[in-house]
Length: 114
Length: 112
Image 1 (cartoon, chains in turn cyan, yellow):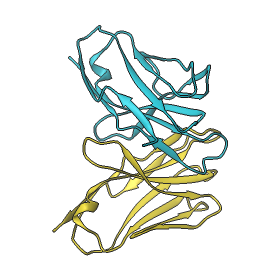
Image 2: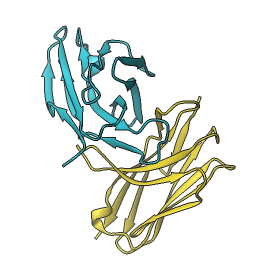
Image 3: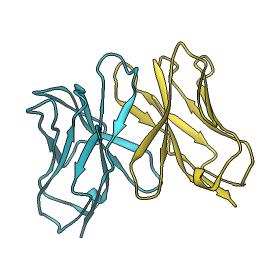
Image 4: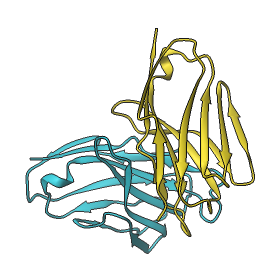
C-alpha cells in the first residue's frame, strides 16, 4: 500500500551510540517531516524538508541531523544518543503549497536510550 | 506562536453515547485543520481534514466543525463504540508554514 514507511519499529541504544532512522514515502510528496512524541505531550517538530536537497530545523532540532537526497527518502540521524532522546519518532509527508490532502504519517519508531 | 489546546484530556463514556471533543487554537490564520486518531503504540491515522473555507466535514459517524473566528473546532462522534477508544489529536499548520502544531490529545475510552 502507498504511504510512509519507517524502519526500524523499535530500537534500544546505549548512551553515545549513533543510529539512523529511515523514512520513505511513495506518494511523490515534496514535503517531509520528522516529529517526536513524548508521553503526555503533543508531537514536536524536529526537522522538515520542502524538497530534495532542502532541509530546515523545526522546534527541537538539537542532537539530530537530516538529509534529503531524493524525493522519497528522509532519514533522521542521531549522532550521540542521550537519554533525553528516548521517544517515539514519526515521519510524515504532505503535498506542498496546498494542504488539501493533509498529512500522512508513518507507524513510528520507538527508541529507548539507556 | 500557534498553540493548540484540547479539552478534555481524557473522557470515558458508555457505549452508544454521542460525544464531543474540543480543540482550540490561538492563531486563526489557518488554511486547514486536521483530526487524527492514535491507537496505543501505533501511528497517527488521519480522520478528517477541514479546509478554512469549510465549516463542517463528515465521515461516517464522525463530524468535525471549524469556526476560525473563534479559534475552535469540535469532533462529534455519534453512537460511540468500544472500537472508538483511542487518543484523538487535532493539528493546524503553523503561521506561515506547513508544519503542524498539535494539541496534546483527548484520550477516549468507550465502555461496553
